Length: 277
Image 1 (cartoon, rainbow, N blue to C red):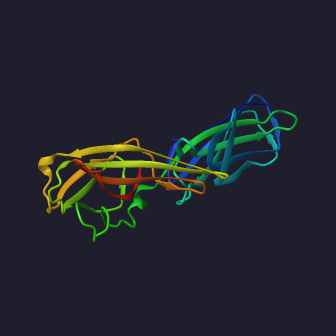
Image 2: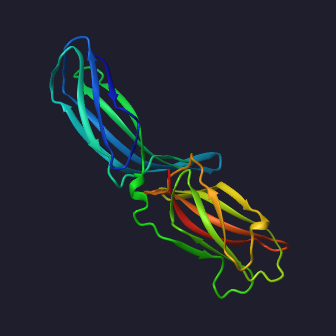
Image 3: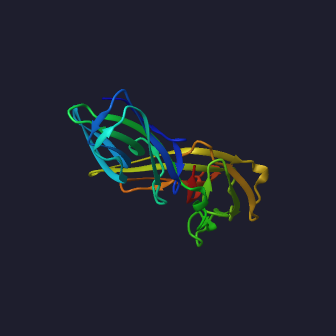
């Protein structure tokens, strides 16, 4: 019978389009008669939402396959005693989703090696892997962004914002050129920038949306010039979730520029941005 089986890879984190090469290592104390050795490459998006129904709870789930491949490494026959390595190689698709674990959604990848042994429990080894977007492809279609609060014809204060692009990486700075218009007699107490991340999940007939501020910074009052653009930056944290859109879930970001006006509601301009870890 098989003593041990393991998946051997040089690392566990990969970019989309990367080629993953490794070995399934089988160690036996004697010859083993098998139905075959296989390696399954699996990727799955899953959502889960729980609702309370009085004293009971109901959990709704949905799943979608991202990857579902099987590589045959050894056909039916006898595996010799000792340590035997079975090499494998595959490429992560360019359009694969990034790995993600959130409140109601997750995207997971893993390798499962299985030795099918007749009349005996199969020898199985599982190895999770983590997928990230290929950084070279993120800015292929970079576009400048212009957005403002309210409509152009609106009376009263306005915020006009310019960004050089709509796609960013973790650890970068989002640079903004901000122009305040038509303030009149309104007193501005502060201008702030917020980067807000949000998860959407759908499980069967149920939907959930959660959001949180992942970065925030205030602009000093002495930097503000009414009617003239002024530049400011907000840093993107290193440990941040990549934007993605799957079958049952997505994660997205909004950059919000807010104007804190004394004795009035905040004036807000915001736009979606794509961020990749």
